[in-house]
Image (cartoon, rainbow over all chains, first blue to last red; front, side, top):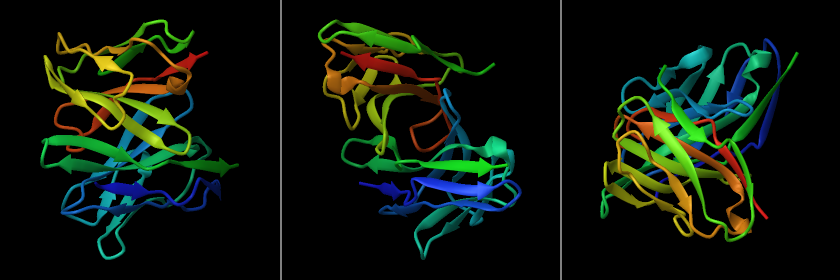
Length: 117
Length: 114
C-alpha cells in the first residue's frame, strides 16, 4: 500500500519568513501527490497536486511544493508566511489497488502550522 | 457555489442508537467518499462510491453502512454506534476516482458516542 509521512506534528514560523511543511512518500509506481489544508471548523481544501511534469508545483494562496524523486519527498513551501496560513496541513497520495480497482487517497497524520505575528 | 453539505455538524448520541449523517453535493460528481479523522492518524476512508448503487469498503468500514440511491446524496449510517466511533467525519466528492482529481470536502460532522 502507498503511504505518506509527515514527520513534524507542528511547525512554527514568524510572519514574513519562508515556511516548509515536510512530506515523504512510499509508493510503487508513479506517485500522485496532493496537499490539502484544513482551517478551524472547516473541511479540507485542495491546495495543489503533482501527477507528472515540472517538479515544482504551484498551488492556491501562494503555496508551492517540490517533488523530489530521489528523496521521495513532496515538501510544501511558501516564500513569505502569513498569520492567516495557520492551519492543519495534510499530505496525501493516491492509493491504487489493482486487485479491486479501488482508488483512494491515503493521508498523512497532518502538520499544524502556526504563524506568529 | 460548488459545495458538499453535511448534516448535522455536531451530534452527541448514546451507544446503540441508530443514526444517519447526510451528505449532499451539487457538482454532479460520480465519486463520493466518507472519511473519519482521528488525532495523529490523519483521515481514513470508511466507504466510497463510484456511482449510483455502486459502493465499496474503504480502510475502516466496520460498524458503518452507506447507500447511494441518487447521485448527489451519500448518507453514512451507524446502525449501532459505539464509543470508538467518536470521531470527526468528512464526506468528499470528486469528478474522477479518488486520488486522481481534486476532492471537495464537506465541513465535517463531529460525532460523540457516550
